[in-house]
Image (cartoon, rainbow, N blue to C red; front, side, top):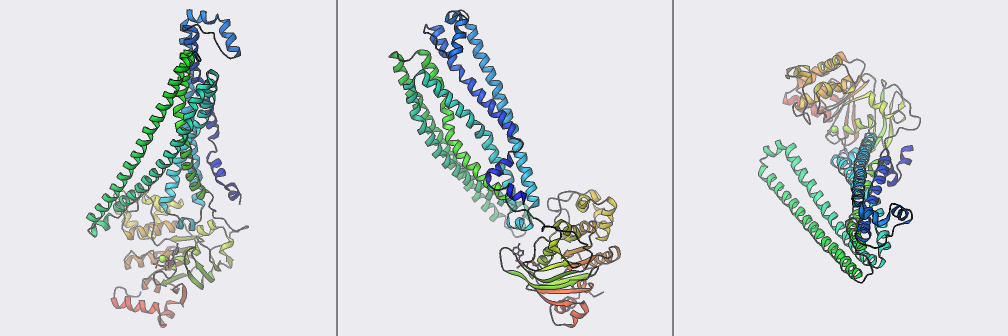
Length: 602
Ligand SMILES: Nc1ncnc2c1ncn2[C@@H]1O[C@H](COP(=O)(O)OP(=O)(O)OP(=O)(O)O)[C@@H](O)[C@H]1O
Ligand SMILES: [Mg+2]
């Protein structure tokens, strides 16, 4: 609840992302502003030097500075000690270099801190989001949000945000100095600014569109490359190399064309920008010269004015880019807010743990995924504690869905699931998952050693070894040169399908749960190994409720009771012997598998 309140609105999201980095941003902004203010002193020193030290014009300085100048001996003194003016220039230059250094340093520290906070926030949030959220969102997109979007916000803060303050100070102070020296020339200098800001804004919107096109094309290109690398076996097996190469080349060409298009726009931007800047300089030089010749402006003022004018052009040109980048960063903040504001998985109020080594009952359970029709219809059955329960059903009949409900990864739309009479929905999700060990239909192994993969639950070396022996994979592991220390490839490529399944079984066994679910987890091992694993399980793992989804009749015959699912409905339910007496899928499968003669009932 608290979390949801906290996350309302993108402003709040931004504030959370900036937690810990605000103080660095403040130092950075103060340093930037000081550095800019110091830079603005230099044209004034030049003005004084030209007008009053080299020339003989009276000195015009604000209040205390005028007294200081006079106190030191006025223009005469400085004429005799020109070194002081040079030292002042060097001093101001050095001081502004120090502040510039601090600005850059703290800008990097602030932005990196913000990136770290954002990634931590996102990762923390993603870990707490429900399974259904993960099913709805593509992995690539989530990764893109955690990397590219965070990076885009960082770029905005690093390159634009701090500059905003600097540019405001620069514009305000420069204009104040310019107006103080000559208000008429200031108006001429100002004429071009709106034009510069407008064209730069228009261009940057165009550039942003082109960049987005390039980004998208790059995404497609890397997906093609990634698919070809991961699916290399399929490509080779079907002789699709030529086709895939042409597909890659076409996309590569498209990507290159988009970049060239972007470069055209960028070149036009810089060319138009240079012309407008030249116009601005030219206007100031021409009108400034006229004013100078007519005696309405001193030479020193003219030089100083030209300096301020030149100092202003680049930042003003950047204002357009800044506005454009701000909207780009805004899109990224939105994308992060979608993740950070997504409702996290929460237990029912007052959720309490209850023993899980009891009878499991599905009572009139119906379920439909958020998208799509109902996949389970009024399913009811009971699994006695400590028994083995088989589930048989055609593909898509809802077997895995049943198991997802039992793990509380989804909740039934109708009906309820109870363990020992206690509703699963009234227990904490974490507790349920700690007590229901699942061997997934498609086992996933981490790119770590076999030992780390099995011992993910924090099991000791002995426990890992014992689980591997029960899962009949110890022998295979020992054959590897590095034994349990063998690294499993990115997707477990160094292991065969059957080995991966057995490592996954061993991993679940180390969890020592009162309920173990095997979702077709022995499909890739031969009948003999399947039998040995089941024998080991019955000998070594006592009192555990086993739920086995399988298409192998031998496995099902070994179960105490079997459920036959058909299109999400309970079609048959009973002991294997009872089911053999009835017409239905169970007997059909029995007859087909026996006729093939692959398997003999034990
Ligand atoms: N995340 C999901 N969103 C929407 N529909 C889904 C989702 N997962 C599964 N389904 C649909 O639910 C139905 C049941 O799927 P389920 O995975 O439970 O079948 P299954 O019996 O385990 O099949 P198999 O034997 O092939 O593993 C299918 O029609 C499937 O398309
Ligand atoms: Mg399944």
